[in-house]
Amino acid sequence: MKKINRIIEKIIFEPLQGIFAIFLYYLFASLKPETASWLGGQLALKISFLLPQNKRAKDNIKLIFPHLPEIKRNKILRETIENLGRNAGEYPHLGRIQEFIKVRGLNNLPKNEKPFILVAAHLANWELTPYPGTLVNRPVMRVYRKLNAPLAEWILRKKKSPLPGEVVPKGNKGAIKMLSVLRSNGIVLLLSDQRLNTGIKINFMGKPANTLTSPAVMSLKLGCPIIPLQIKRNKGLSFDIIIHPALDLAKFRGNHKTKVENIMIDINNLISSWINQNPGQWFWHHRRWKV
Image 1 (cartoon, rainbow, N blue to C red):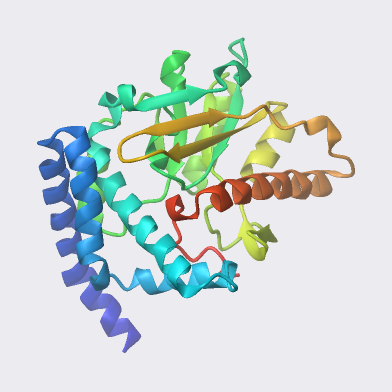
Image 2 (image 1 turned 90 degrees about the horizontal axis):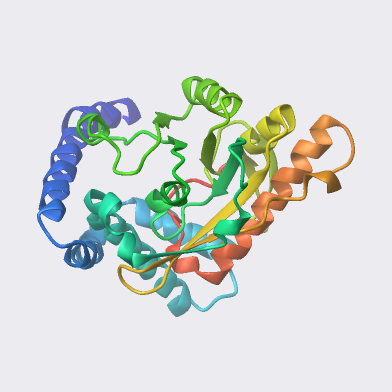
């Protein structure tokens, strides 16, 4: 039965999702950024009951905040859904909304042309996390997860990214490309809160979760700094991008494995603190704690 459902999903639902995504993309592109952002949020709230992933998000919120009253957990879920809708509305305008972005901590970026790794999370509109690269005139290479709908993936990724820097799907190709970019004194951006089937199992938001080790491994291998980058949505189409000081890699002792684990514990703890500040702006819909 599961195999039949998967076939139906591949033949019917994924193409429909792709057509719908393309329609929304061009609809949002035809509107002003503020209007597209607002409309995206409202549409997401209206149709969210159709999406089975919302149950997963609700379960995840309950897992992490078991003692929070249900009314407050539902508020987090509602804010999450609206934020995702706004992200969709803002996507066609990513390269043209500089006036709505305030960057803090730009002086924490290296002053030379040396390589470094930015670590960020699926918070607010995470598609904007490469934006600081435009301010220092250096493109930012980033790794992304392919969309489930192949048609939407083909159309949207065929378009040139509105922010400078190569966009590479995660996997072996992405890993090889990251090393190549860093060895060429480039910048790599990683969303370090993604779930992996592999990785190391350490706490994230207080619960065990498989965690990627790429930032720590590449940093130790190439001697380049890791710089945490936080993004917050203020209200509507308004963002703060906060560039934190580089991690103090000298404090990590022990063998290679221990250093990698402790670096990733530091990163997980930092991202967890960002989520606790704005839980309604994080992407609760993925299987983060499936280990």
